[in-house]
Image 1 (cartoon, rainbow, N blue to C red):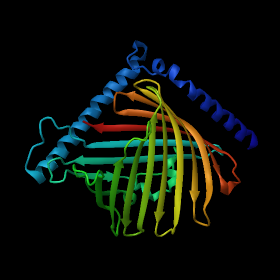
Image 2: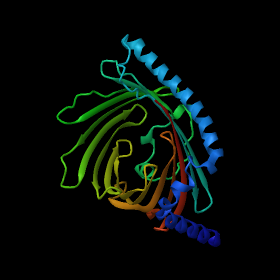
Image 3: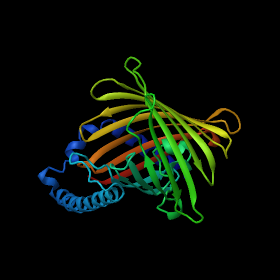
Image 4: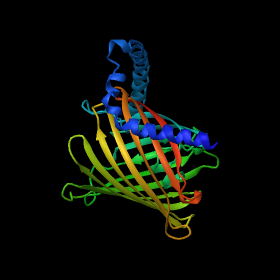
Amino acid sequence: MRHQKAKFKKLLWATLGLSLAAGLHAEDALDLDDPEAGFFSRTFNRAETTRDNWSERWIDFAEGVDYYFSKENSPPEYKNESYVKLQLRETWEEHGEMQTDVRVKAKFDLPNTQRKAKVFFSSDEYTENSLEERVRSNSTGERFRRKESVSGIEITPDDEWNKWKRSARVGIKLRAPLVTFGRYRLRRPMEAWGEWLPEFTQEVWYFSDRGWGETSEFEVIRPINERFGLRYFTVLEFEDQNDYFENVHVLSLNQGLSDKSALEYRVGSVFSTEFRTQMTAYFFGSSYSYKLHEDWVFVTASPEVFFPKVDGWNAEASFTIKLDVYFSQ
């Protein structure tokens, strides 16, 4: 077992090291326009035809729903923002376990309704997972289960309220008995602090089976040059049924390698007030993201090392592959 763990850690460190140089050859290795990649090009071309047909049907359906409620056609120059997103994520953990996520998100854009409403669907409600799980790249074993899915209406007014952008969601969990929920979000891009660009987001939400909670997020971004940028964000969350705060801090360095690929290096820490205010874990890792085909197929590889206090700060290594496929206009 120790030999397997040592071997896995060596593999992880090698992956972390290779990710630093991934941009040097990634474009050549995955260039679908290369004649030598003819098989992949033909495969993606066939898949693209199928994807375009599904996307067109989705947009037509969304526009039909919009016309039913408003009795108006969308403006000729308007780009309908309806989409379906399929996400597959696989994590290999140091002790041999594997976790797989399957998520589906969808949104109908209804531009002619009075407040530009959108009908949304998601196979999971993100606040069901802890803050720690949401900021890490690892899979959490999510599956497409009807009873965990949520659907409803989102309203996003065009006008701002004292420089705050607003949105509201009301909906249900698709289970019996039905669970109702509501969420109100305020977001405000703030004046630049020199080279830093700050933004604050505040959410308040309520679920009939869990009670209320709130999430506060503060983010600052600093472009360094055309290729590099720094990002720091912290999130504080309180859920009434738990009666304690969760808090995360993440600092990342982003490197744009090309118009198709990018690297992110990050370090983060997790805090909780469940027993007393204390750090419960810290982690570091990297992510290599690549636009596999045009603007609708993306793949991300993410090695990570996690240090939880509950396990005596012992390192837990993992490697995650994520595939995102979009169906949109």
